[in-house]
Length: 345
Image 1 (cartoon, rainbow, N blue to C red):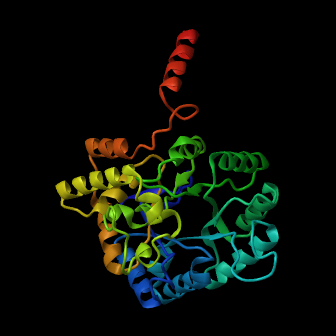
Image 2: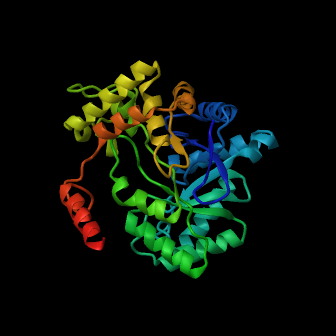
Image 3: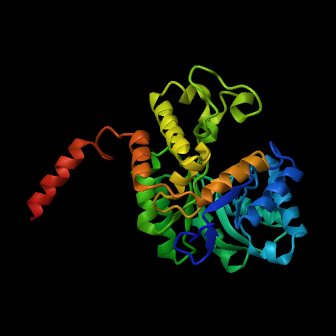
């Protein structure tokens, strides 16, 4: 397992993290604890959860695992969770207000059975609550020892930059990570979000690195999924919905390219897709999400896979979302850049 810092912090984490959204839903507690043991044995040390996963049950499962393991295992883990969405309560049981986050943070600490959360992430932008209210609260929580680091999740580029500018100006705890959706089928964050992270030293913690299972090769053209998979149970589930991805020729071109490299390397398609994400700029750790220990074991094998420059280039080209023109790319931008450079010389 490779270790990297969480963004510009000095905290070292394994470059593969264990996501726990399946815990308490698709994975029962015994299976979840088996996954946690397997992950720890492989040298993994970053556990990512959220207060809304399985209606708070995921945090409880992680907390019981931590409590039941030797101190050397428990103390080695870097625990990350999130707050913002409702877990069942009154009208103030959502958002990034100081009132809601105060309750949510204390509840997460109780469920996890720890005194300090290593990385506390705001789960999404809140258009109602002033940034000053949210990040003053989080800075106070850091000073109180309830949180070590602050992170963001699902922020756009301008939201990230505004947050960093405010916290830096106020002398508050500046966020060190961003958790976005990022995989070979979803690369649009490279247009603004990744550059904003690079400019400010935020590490990326990509979620859905396998595109909801698309990049494992389990889905096929003109054959709606069925059976015990997320899309088998509900083909129109969320961002990975079959009707959303299957009509796009790019989807199948990417899958074919991943399959060709996997066959040549004698590894699984999932390992190739995970290795690609892990080798992208600013990635601190890639969040794995498995239903079974067998799936997790296959994913963890990606820790030893390093794609060549030619393989990375091939995947980059076939998966390029190709912005048409201004302001993200296209020949017009290149020509303009050349004219500006020429005028300055």
